Image (cartoon, rainbow, N blue to C red):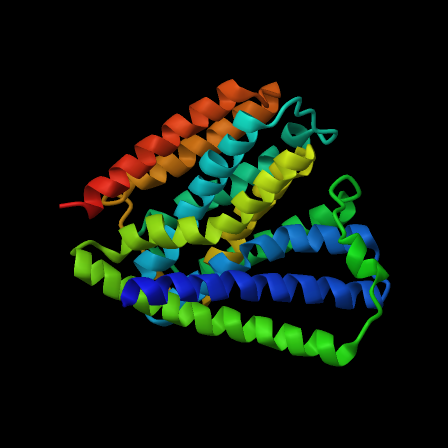
Length: 311
């Protein structure tokens, strides 16, 4: 039963995030907020709402391992799985934006800050505030440099605005996010106990994979449409939000404990895929070779997780 609850609850989180993003965009369009500002803020915040709901709920229930593992796992899946799929199946990827020159620092800084504040074994509220300030800096950067990253839903621009409908769907989205996140964490904890594994493994593998599914689905659709340039920038933005907004918000809610030595392999994998992303963007290696390399690292990551799950 816990497995069914987990799948349903995680689906509610994803659908709730979609409602919140879509209706927030609708309100912004109604107030004639410039499209590039909408695009920038949604890139930074919207794609990480499922991770944020899961990690903050885990933090609230004093489950630090679930909260941190969800962030690390999501970053790893976003790069190794989502970008790996893009590079393997897309043809002729030539982003107009210089991702290395403009985004490489943002792909690296939050990870370095995470490693720095984790050495004492606790990510406290002050560190959480630092992460959130870093997120604010990232949003300001995107707003000032987002004209190359615009992706506004044209259908929403054409629709007549209805406050009752929009607010109802927005509230419904938040209810699904919060309620789904609570049941996701509860069922994930029960699954961890039934398998005899740590909550870290469940957060790192199951929850993070589930919350990365929207990015994967969107990327597959983009590949089919031949429009994948923006996906790479979106993944970087999502990962920045995971390390700043998601982890920072969870730490502000309640200090998070982490054993770096115990989970060194998983942290090392996250560092490796992040460095690989920098190398790929620096050398513009948007090809099948890069996809295969990312998939090989993903295989190592999954193999290690399965060894901790299977008897």
